[in-house]
Amino acid sequence: MQAAIKTLIVDDEAIARQVLWEKLELIPEIKIVGEAANGKEALHKIMNLQPDLVFLDLQMPDMGGFEVIQSLSGTHLPVVVIVTAFHQHAIKAFDAGAIDYLLKPVREERLQKSIERAKTLIGKPREIARDLARIASMSDAPASAAQPQPQKLVGRIGREYYLLENDEIVALQAEGELVWIITAKGRLLASQTLRAIEGQLHPASFQRVHRGAIVNVKHVRKMSALSSSRWLLTLSNDLQLVVSKRQAHNVRRVLHW
Image (tube, rainbow, N blue to C red; front, side, top):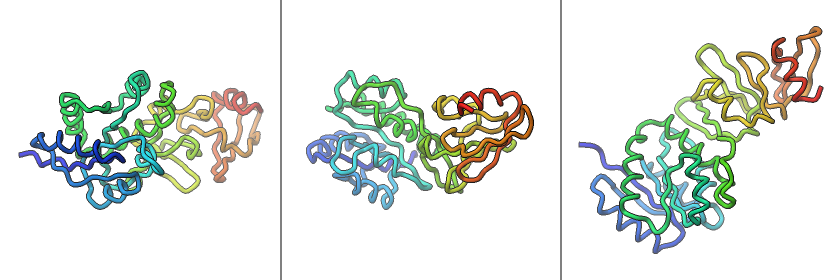
């Protein structure tokens, strides 16, 4: 038999938690392990209860749902389903980002679909981390129904996964089959190929310098000529990268040098 899905409900409205609790109790594979009334309590319970699935309200005082997601890390990341009262037109932004959400008031058939989707992710930390990155990247979109923001990247240290803002990234380097995300604090192992990551980065902020490296142009501190067509970049963390002849023109254009 499939193990019960440990589930946490997070909403600042007691009646909303009660309604969702009652609907979830009717689903045999769900085991409700707790509830939280705010973001800080949610983080505490996620850490201690280690739920498989979290139904997370977005609009809460002090710490909203997006802030909760951005604060998550560790070896047991839960699948998150957004629960929101946003107007239908704003939900288009979520649809564009392929994010699972429930619109209040929650309908039973839609709830069941979310649980079925969650079942396909449980036990797959890399896929869960990518899903959380997609949700976190939508933090500015719902209010304006704007296009999705550049997706946050997923980095791994050991068995722990982290969601990284584009501005935190100094560079990305490929070493054989591995891709490293380099930040001011160190290196994290990426969960995708360099080519796949390149498509998620903001084109005005990131530039490929050679086949195996991409830099955040905001972190370039010095560009030194090695020859008429070869350059050496020094980044904010003192990392140095040689620009290939093929990319030299593009790098100089982006940096306005």
